[in-house]
Image 1 (cartoon, helix red, strand yellow):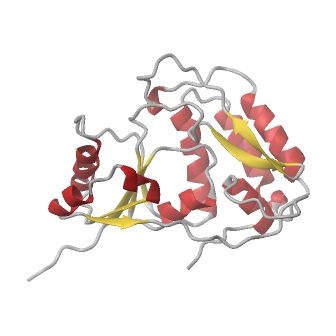
Image 2 (cartoon, one colour):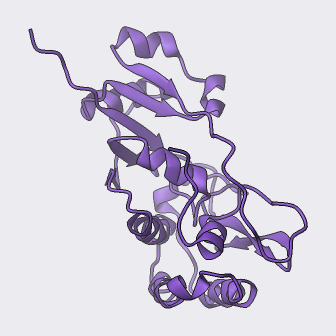
Length: 231
């Protein structure tokens, strides 16, 4: 009697130049689904992240047009401005002396030139996430522009998505314990796997006396040349 092969998925919103843990989740699943068909939240990771500036963490924030609380992430537009030039200038100014910055400098500059021409925040995030996955040799299938079957119940939306992609396992972070109905998942023959972010290895950072964690993946790449996932 044949058994169904294991297929693990994760479902997350797109983030701007995310931290190492975001990419650790991507590489840990067979299919990663970008879930930008949900409400855009202000002061979140969708349009901003942190880098080091003179040894202190600071925000890089993409300006967005925000019209109402029902606005979706994939509907969120970025006004025409020189935000991309400012971000690249800050990155270059504060990381040009990092050991491996030169390996990525030209690519990063090209990405920001491309990003400045894009209208939607989701497209900008896709541009950077795709590039970083290629650098980290992450070959997970990523599904963009996904729209789930409509339902008001968030657990049902996730379960429907798991069924649509024939998932046997759903990987999610510890914060989901506040709302996820694991009984409902199990009754639908979907195993919930909890991803507890490990204590990633510390590395030398510029102008810091103590390691500052959870910064954009750029900080890791520029200082180490790769990434420090646990095996």
